Length: 374
Image (cartoon, rainbow, N blue to C red; front, top):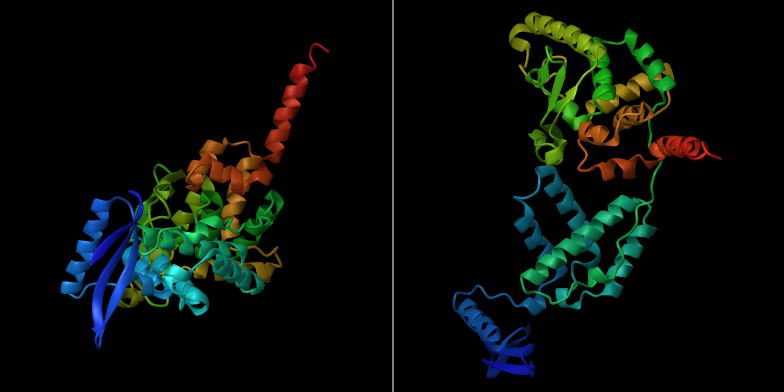
């Protein structure tokens, strides 16, 4: 074994014998960046690892092996759905560049990979950006683990997401929707009213229990969400971020419909008796089981087709709720908190178009003030 200084107090070459091929010694070479003491410590670490058979030849680690190790490392930090999604994206990365040694990954290889993704119309801007984040994060971890010295992905500009027009209903379209659902079941009415009134996310609505509603105070407590994956089925998780936990005051009409729906649900429970599945959720299957988080989307699609309404996603009802609040002149800080956004800047970024009228009103007010003495 030896530690050879390449650059004074900065760079050392470590040479370690890791085996023999006949009479020929097989060496492991490693460039160490740092002081001589640390380089010697690294040399001793390799020696110790060779003794207990835990030594990993860093120069031979592939991108695939890194991603596998990174997934294991991150599993406890992510939600189950996030882990499954990231494992899927890693599989796609591995098909293109997983076989390449980590030491050989460079800017050109990564740029070609992103170009390949862009040419595949299956992937949206947001998905390509997600691939970029996975590669950046895993390579940063590789630096910490001592597998590489630099992150080539940091030299590539993060792919931009082209802003899409937000799907939502105008006040007139909301009025039409609410008029149409008068002919629908109380469950459908309660779900649509609650979505528009609260602006809650789909998974948050499906995750609600009756204990989350205080009928006396007319409040809704959002503190969890329901998701689905093929591997895990329907499962409950915490809300998206810490700021997603929130208490929302509901309108009289929404409370009125929820009360009527609760009464109807209790009557159905009594009729079915032991056949009732006893889910604690507000929105359940017809036999009282947990509702699939995709069901609200199917319900809205059914209503849209039946009454020939403008097609929007169920998440579009959240956008509708927030846009209505903006047009009503409610302060951005209040809207942001009610929506469960991480910051007011998030609200402004997503709904910048809807704030245009507010900015125009400020200009109009300033025009009146400055024109007084003209």
